[in-house]
Image (cartoon, rainbow, N blue to C red; front, side, top):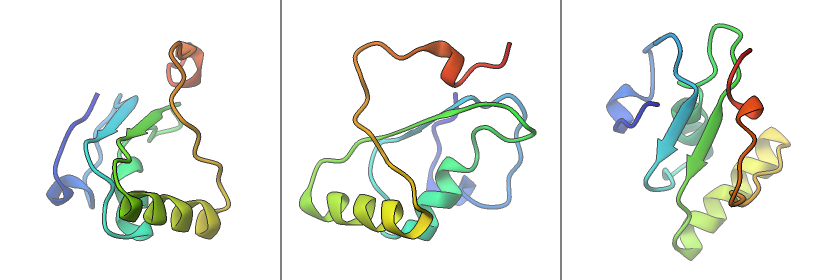
Length: 87
């Protein structure tokens, strides 16, 4: 698991990071992409968790979904570890 600030969001490659945790939604879709891109590198699976706690956070989440054509879902109570762990 990697918990870091935006300083580590770009230009760092760490092997075996399978969970990325964002305590806050970044200000832009690009920064979000760089943050979650730290996990799941080198052909591995990963899970990114971001706390969305305000209307502005929701707006950035919507921008991310539209720009990168992804569906960001709420985190379920039980997460299947095969989604973020390689066998």
